[in-house]
Length: 365
Length: 209
Image 1 (cartoon, each protein chain N blue to C red):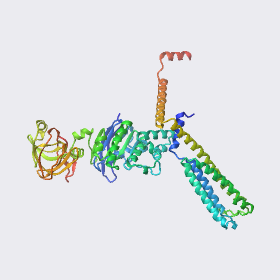
Image 2: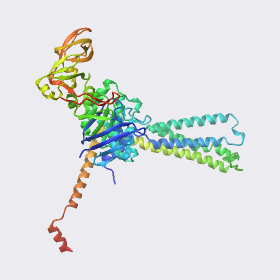
Image 3: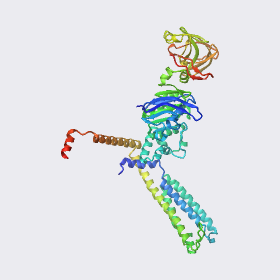
Image 4: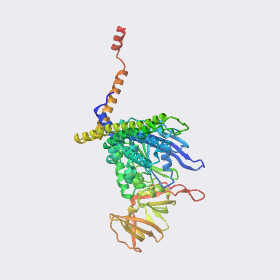
């Protein structure tokens, strides 16, 4: 039985604005699920509906076999960690961590045992007598996690918990979160807009846009086999380069260049002969052998690799990621090609009468 | 049910992270009684106090209030020495009865209006002053005793942790394992109780009946 079972979840606000459409997800016991997407895609709303902080407009939420759709938050046996920590400034760290158990009228012995165990896991034993203002951002976030851990909930919900931290601290906290998940073997739903967090933390990623789930899968699946153009451009840094064009026999043809297809690609795309498609190539899959001319505009050496920005045929901006240290100058022209095994082809997106995308272009291969 | 050694250890360990609130609250209650005494003291109708004594009396009271407050904050943080300070202040509160209140009683000066009550003799107000001072002293003594006991407990606990090299987290883990074993044993017992009886057992039972 899945630990959390979300079926056909919708969120419609009073004004009629729909934030989440038909959200379906089964989360297994001990699974780390990351909801990722741009701001306003409905990921936090979904999490808040699971937490009980937002009413569920339609659909059902089942946690460990119990229908929690209309249950108040306190009866759902979940714990949520917020971006802004939400610690009580006048209480010590010990009191902050013990607070929820005190409200439940647990015995002092049980509270102490749980707080000490959580403090050990989070390496907060020496901080217990301090006030939150005496701790760093990372330590405060650990306290917020400790407050969740002591409750021993069925599901942990994290709402962008690392967004307030600087880049270095975020990296170390990510590693700590992975260790924490291994130690607790807890079921976790984690919301972030940071794809690095999503890729490094998740057992499975739920990629969302415009209130819809775009793809659910393991991080590597989302990276290697994006379901549509949105996932292809959202996951991966720098984003995938996209070229609008069409299939003509054994060639991909666009305004800027023609690119020969391999036999495998031609076979897979034969139904699309003469039709418009989108070609997607990740920056790391651009090679420096080929017939496409790239006018370089910028060369960014990152140590291990180089990001080369340029324009194909002087029009279409793309970015390439080369494993070597490069020293191109603005205005240089190089020949590029694509790793044929790692080229992605997508349908054209569906748009409404105003030109707004209603459905992203689905992956063909 | 008697506590196990581990439970006692945990009970003492809680003091490392919890303040001595009872000690603090009692000391503050003693301070409140002192304030009430202070208010009534200046309701003397006689002009006995309209001398330099009034200034000295105010300073003395302010010093006392400050001393009680600081002591309450210190005992809250388990500073044992302040238990003795509270005892000294409590003794002084008792000693004060024999100062102005007794003088007022002897000279029938305690006849000020007090919450709409206008006494003709001093006995009532003297009794109220007595209650305030004794109440204050009692609270301070209570605070001192509780704080002394708690501080001693904490000192001994800290000494034990250091001497026996005890890791509380390890103790917590042991207790969790004990609890888990207890739960498992109880579940097994239940299973045995609910297990279907064999035909031989049922036949034997019928025979007995």
